[in-house]
Image (cartoon, rainbow, N blue to C red; front, side, top):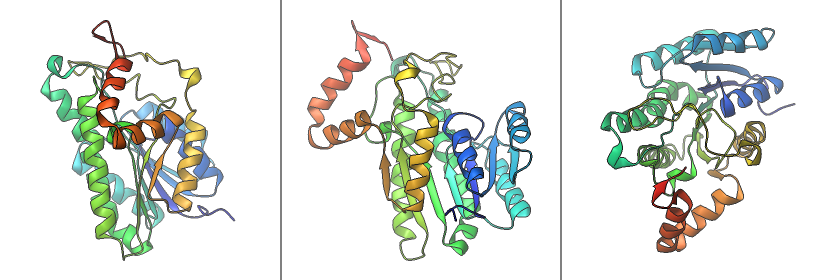
Length: 268
């Protein structure tokens, strides 16, 4: 029997990419799944796809604490409890800090960091009762600040520091706390990345065919949850970047700059 069978699992931001892949795998494993997103049409499409299964959806902007509370409470009303919370909802950015409106940085923090805080705060009593799991989907940018992604990096550093604190606070409660750094993965997050004015870029500068698929990434995440891993860093590039930045930070500064700038211009 699957580890996830009959477990109540929340995946925030389940409309696209890694979140959607997680939902498919969890439903196949017999889990009761709840997800949220900002676009009703995408959630409706999910409901149609999984109409014969235990899936609860709700329109919710995770940057709004009251909406997060309603989503968590509606999940408990639907399924009775919460075993696992996967804080997956997130947005990115692509613009130099000097060109970026500060509202863009605030938006990144509100969604990527405070969204996880709001959902976890509301869900934690049930997770503690179930001796369950809290997961944060972070990034290599949570270990290494990336040019053109200052707000994104800040939000992921904050997320990982907060989760580490939470993990230590809950060490002897039976609750498992972990974070995942997927590296470059096929996902809508780059298409929805904000520009300097907070508008969607609408395109990806990466060759998606060379990236880890969302489905493969989701399998790694669920395996790590089952094995109660502390941290999961995916892809060779991600692992190598974390290693280099830890032991050779000055060299990493130069390599990262070379990767993200061509002829003095930000290219990724």
